[in-house]
Image 1 (cartoon, rainbow, N blue to C red):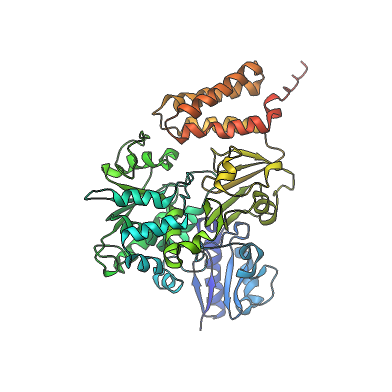
Image 2: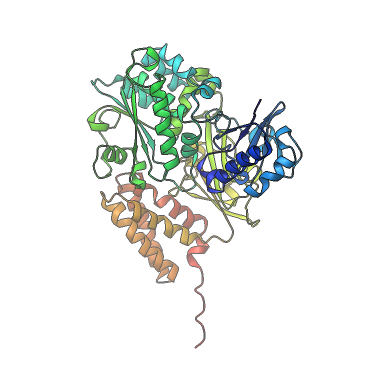
Length: 518
């Protein structure tokens, strides 16, 4: 019987040579006359170990990594197909500390299954949530999602069940389900990993939403920078249609739901739901004023559920296991689990799914191993490029929406970026303005003009030009952008700027370098 070998086809693994490793394994097996079955799985999330190769044995799947093409012959020589000793052997994958410490609900299958095998998906619990939903009324599904405490994982943290109920209760001949897969925050990659590693989960979650609110059409709005996810989703949707999971009658129940993928054009602002809807309609991606809410007048003016990839992907587990089982994870008003994306200057970066309530320090120091440079941590940005910078003394804050908000920070999409003591926080503040100036949709003046003025003010401060006066202008500009911007793009840009200014004020008052003697 062929030995199963798993080599990830995830974009992160491909970027460090996984395709070459996979081909080398096939060649080596053929040359040795060894029967193997090569499975291209998703990534387990231990990105510092990619390409991670796993071999299925009676004792479980044994991990080896990071594996380079030059290592393949040696692995075969060492008898890795039968758990032979080798310097790259890590042990049983599920027993590795990084894996054992997690609570994987949404990411339970990722790295385990062939992403495009429906048989594999079903064998690991796939479609159980959809089948449970199809036996319920739409109102009952909505109440289950509400009771679970699930909040939008895209950043805003709005209760998912309330949004669904609004669309459920709206009277309209046509309703839509829209997935915001425009994952643009720096330091975030959970959406991509899920779409590449378990695409049927997203499809199932969106189908459940459609049944719940009475929608018959859905769109996945995907960022154009994700070609691997695009190909995987397209193939998964076709397979789901052929299997009757999508189409005129979902699993032969009479509920129609058709799904398409639409590629964005690379605009960060399309992560904002109304701008995304404008783009889907074929218009320039400008932010809409609210009200009306998209739940009442969304895509083409119809009631629309707009949720993030991780929000939809959490729903099948909730329907399969029950609202209470999900709500038993987490703390306070933050229930369930959060896929944390750890990056920047960190020794062990990657994807970690944990119940809300773990501290930032545990994530960075225990699981991340501290900085890659070995230097002290100075700042940590949580929540993407518009998130606050926290100091090394604030790392005991727990991952919870309200706990971070009390510190004038935000959880966002769960991205964590670590900086050591060489970072210049005044330049980081300048970057926030520069980013906003480039990515603003331009509809409102506070964001469009304020970000440009912000770069100019920061340049004067860094250059030492009338610093006290320019600091006063900086604070005033931040208040204006916070209070008057139309959406969170301009409204949140001051968050990283003010956190840098308040926590690292010494960087805004650095002595200028002495001029070289003539």
